[in-house]
Picture 1: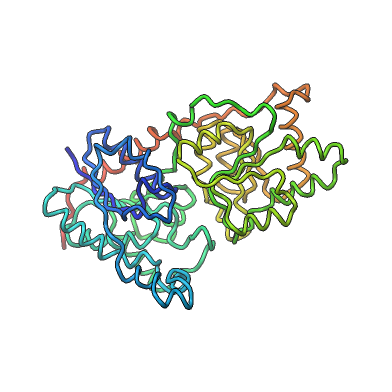
Picture 2: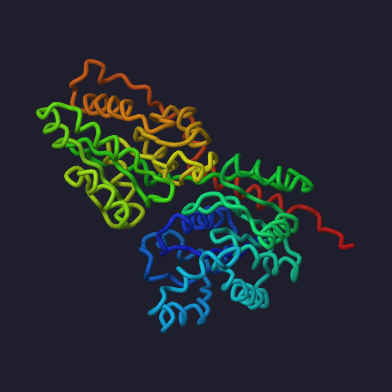
Length: 431
């Protein structure tokens, strides 16, 4: 039996996107006969926790918790935080590559302890944060075992802030990680191409693409639709810095231009469900637009429950923003859940892979600008379709062609192939 050690900052029961990818890989590898050992942080009570996720893997995966360094706890809870803000607020812009650098030594020491009692055949480090790969670099240098870097997003990409130039130190660290890793995985073709062009001296065969995925067992559940409302659903957070609120501005303009009788009807039947999106800025934007009557906020919830609410929707929303802070290669993880649920998508996004996937799979509408007239027309069409007000209501072009390639088993099978190929390579001769 082969053994893989996975170092990840987040793992269930933590219920955030960064925890689902190593979770799904762990499930697949266990079924394929691997021994999986997870090194991760203890569940943070500041995050939503979903213990049901552990029910599927608890008996198969060994989870070793690596505690948060005490210095961070002191900073965040002490006098400094009381007077000038939390350590994260202050240090986020200063510490490179990110605040996770404080955990590198803890993960390194935890692996050394683990290696004394277990034969590890391959190591995988998965971000965010990117600093977690520095622990992998140290381990690789000490033990010289195959090491896979699941980079997901490029090092110079942060969802909340957009693209930024790497400092000299960050550039050096990224180069070392790319050079010494046995394989480097990104979530999109665009991201992988960026890395290959930046590090052209490295064999291109080292770079791989593994997208995010969906679980067919969860997205194929039978869920009843609301017979009285047309529901648009959005799951996850908004990134205010990217101005993702074009859909809501279009709603406001739609209600403003229609006759009062129509306004009363549409405001009665339309509901927008925001799951885990009730942050202060989003609420302020929506209130300022006068849309509180059609928006329903839901707190973060167990993953399976969020999928059930997606299945109950009539349309799902992707809103990434159009500016330079939104990278064309960004494929939001919610896209794959939407594809699995086979609910028509309304995407407001830049030209890029998100738009390409939706077009290729024929899974919804793509708008490359904040086109209010088009959004108005789409809403009228789809609401009429649901309530049989349109003679063409049974005709739809949403076929979701080829979405099976993003199903968890298929995606993780490709991930496992990369891991297997790395292990099967002959050992490198030191010079």
